[in-house]
Length: 320
Ligand SMILES: Nc1nc2c(c(=O)[nH]1)N[C@H]1C(S)=C(S)[C@@H](COP(=O)(O)O)O[C@H]1N2
Ligand SMILES: [Mo]
Image 1: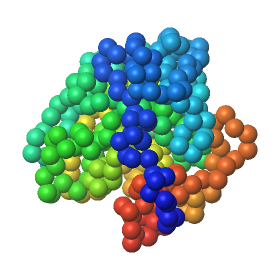
Image 2 (image 1 turned 120 degrees about the vertical axis):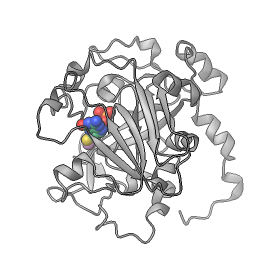
Image 3 (image 1 turned 30 degrees about the horizontal axis):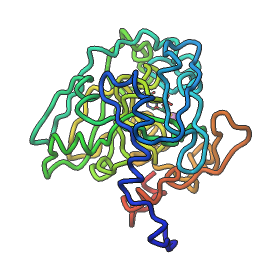
Image 4 (image 1 turned 180 degrees about the vertical axis):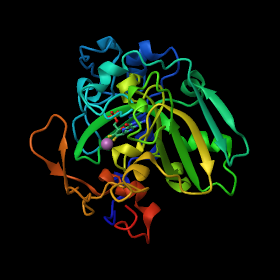
């Protein structure tokens, strides 16, 4: 961060962005290869599909094979077959099969609370109204494993700007669908359903806070939180709440499902922090899915330059 960079070495922001972004509108998925080459991307690769998923391999498109640190993308098959989604099951390998018939259409998302302009979006509106960009982010689960996932989505801030939070709005509260008919896990009262998560408003306005509708160039599969989920790459994976039906602007800190279940283990902030252990295990290292051994966990999951300002002056051990 403090390193001096010669201005001539800095890529102008618009070039940087156009290289990393590609726009996919509704109906354009089939032509995403053409869109990619039109944007001048040099790398386009097709990824083999997971046997259990009905995505034709030609529909899976990514613009590159690594993230900005040079870490390889986690294969599509792993991203869609090793999941945490307790509404289905606590078995990571069991989610995909149980989620197969989950109904993701019709689907509406209400954005309300302390806003001037409340809205209810249809999932198709979300896909067309907000430009869908490829965003390659590391996902670090609090349990100590991680993946690199090429999401499709847009900044939460774009949606929030449209609903116009009032000056009383201080936090954003997210809610997953409550439907025990479809979610067998919700028939147990082990957890307080529905799944709730939250962000401080300034965190929510950071451009890295992403609303995802897809990954690997195609729509999200149910096991990954279809049709619409949050992705907060600098926080532990549990903050990235799936299958969202409601987003509410509020004035007090929301209590998440995990804060409710185990307040001493899971706090509101949950920033990835190798120096603050979980009460039952270290967070200094992680296992990247597909790799042998462990690698060091990075502060804020490698996004410190983008997000550290949000926590200036805060004790990150207290605010875990
Ligand atoms: N509604 C809901 N959202 C959720 C979860 C969940 O059980 N239910 N699990 C979280 C956890 S612990 C992680 S690590 C990520 C996993 O996302 P992925 O399966 O798409 O990799 O989703 C998060 N979002
Ligand atoms: Mo997680």
